[in-house]
Length: 153
Ligand code: ADP
Image 1 (cartoon, rainbow, N blue to C red):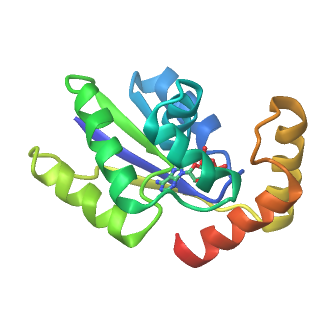
Image 2 (cartoon, rainbow, N blue to C red):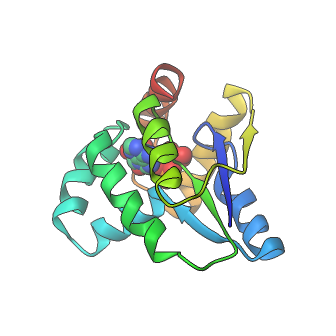
């Protein structure tokens, strides 16, 4: 099974490239941001906790996201491959991913980094905010997410 990590700042195009890889290779897509937005929509306990962090542009605590990821990964068992979009974002998450995969006889197959200048990221995210209405795509929260990316990811 292929385990592909797609890595890059908010707005770098992880979701867009993941969709192309899913289409071309038939992989399953794990977007931690999408899973969290689903939890918020379903008004689960995890969703309620996550919303507070996401609205502030902060990362969800490692323990919560790592547990969630393990469950989602196991639900994709039997697929040709998986694309990890938005995970890992901290060193602890990277170590947890390695341990999770190794304990299942798997490893990271490849990692793709999308490297985009910061002015371009800001421009894209502001436009996305106008189109999609995503709560965290406003100027103040975008700036915080970029700081968090540079410092923690
Ligand atoms: P973007 O890459 O544009 O920030 P995402 O949808 O990947 O968009 O993430 C949105 C928010 O979800 C993040 O700002 C963070 O609060 C939370 N999140 C997503 N993935 C993780 C993760 N791996 N660890 C912690 N928080 C996460």
